[in-house]
Image (cartoon, rainbow, N blue to C red):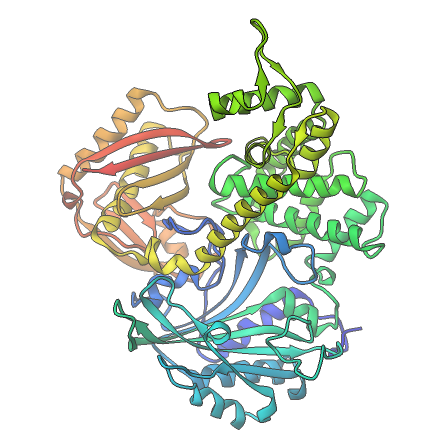
Length: 624
C-alpha cells in the first residue's frame, strides 16, 4: 500500500496526470525526442528534457508556441558508478514544462505546488523547498521566497542555499543562467541529526522537482546581466516521484523496473534483498539492460561498438553480464531481460517495439561475444597482453620481457595500470577478471597503479558526461554560427545524394556537427566504393552550384509525412513540425539551423567513410 495513496501509483498514470494538468494551463504537449541528440557534438545522449529545446530557449520560435510540456526519455552516464544504490538510474524519464519568454515565477511555482498538493494530494507538511540565497553577482531570490510563503509553506521549510545548490548555468563561460527552486519530498526516514535538511545526502529529503529561472546572461567579462528573454525550465524525475508517492524504499520497486528485477530473481534463483551484494548486482543488471534496450531501440539507436554511443552500449551490456556472473548466472540471459523491458516501454515509446528485432539480435551477439571474453584461457590472455605491449612500443616491451636467442619470452611480466585499463577499454575485460587472470598466469600486477589509473580514467568519463549535461548550450543546435549552419544544410544534401546512389533504404541514424566538419551516420550494410563516394560528392556539389533555395514550412506531422518529408518515424501525429525543403531534391523534418541558399556552401568533400556499428556506416565530410 502506498504511503500517500489508496492504490499504487503507476508510471503511466503519473505522466498522464502531469500532461493533462499542464495542458489545462495552456501548454502544448510535445513528443519525447530521440535519445541521440541531433547534430550535437558535445553530448552522446539526451540527458534532460531541456536538450531538444535549446534552440528555442535561446530565442528560436517553436512551432507549438511558448508553453510546452512533455515526458522525455534520457540517458545519464555521468553517475554510472553510483548505479547500484537506491536512486541512481542510467535510463530515466523526465517530466517537464517550459515557458519560452512567457509566464514567470508566480505561475511556475504556483502550478508546481498545485499539481503536487491538489492533483497528487501530497500534504503540504510533506514538502520542503530551496531557493537561491544571493551573492555579489545576483541578489537573494526574494520573489520565489514570497511566492512560497503565500502558497502556505512555513519559513522553516524554505531553505536558502548558495550557487552550488540553487543556481543553473551558464553552461560555458558565458550564456543564460539563473536561480532555481527545488522541491523536496520529506520521507518518514529519521533525521540524520539536528541540522538535517535538503542539502543532506541522508535520504530524509528526496528532490522531486526543479524550477529553473533563466533570468540572467553572464557576459565575457563575468558580469551577470538581466537576460533579454526570460525562460522557465522545469524537471520532475518520474521514477523517483513514483517511488516516494508509493512509499517505496528505492526506484527498483516501481512498475517500470520491478518486473526486470523479478525476472533476474527467476533466472538467478536469488532474492533481490537477500544481501547487500546481491541487491547491488541486481540493480546494476536491471538498470544497464533497461538503458541498453532503450538506446538500441531508439529510432536513432546504435548497436554495441567501440566508439561514442556504441561504446556506452557495449559497456552497459558487459557490465550487466559481469554482475550477472556475480549472481551465479552462467548462461545467456540478456535477451530474456530485453523482452521484459520492451514489453514495459512499448506503450509509451512505440519505436522500441518496432525496433525489437534489431535490439534482440544485437543483444544476443554482444552477450555471446563477451562470454568468450569472460571465458578466455590463460594462454589467450597472455597473447592479448603481448599484443598490447607491442602496441605500446619498444619501451613497453623491453620493460616486461627478455629475448633469449630468437624467441620473445615473457618472464613474470608486470601489468601496469595503463595496460590493465587498455585490456578493459579495448578488450572489455572487467577489472576483477584482469586481476584473476593475472594471478592464473603468474603475472605481476601493480594493484596500486591499476586502481589509480582506473580511478583517473573513470573520473575523466564522469566529468565529461556531467559537463555534457550542461554543455548543450555551447554547441550542436545551439551553435548557430554560419559554418555550423552550412554543414547542417549540407547533411540534407548528403542524405539526398546517398539515397539516390545507394538506395532509398538509406536513413539518417545520427549526426554530429562542429564548426569544422560534419559526421553523418546512415543505414547501409556495405562499405561504399570509391565510385559511389565520387557520385555522392558530384551530386552534392552539383546542387550547390544550382544555388537552390532552402525554405521552411510548418505543417501537421501527418501532412508532412504524406507530402514525402523524411525524418524520424516518431509518434508526432497532430503536432506541428518544421519541414525544410531544398529545391525539389530534399524534404526533411528538422529543427534547424540552416542557410538560405545552397550556393553559400562552397565545395563539399568526403574525407572518410567507415563502419559505425552493425549495418550503420559513417561519413565525415567538410566544406571548402
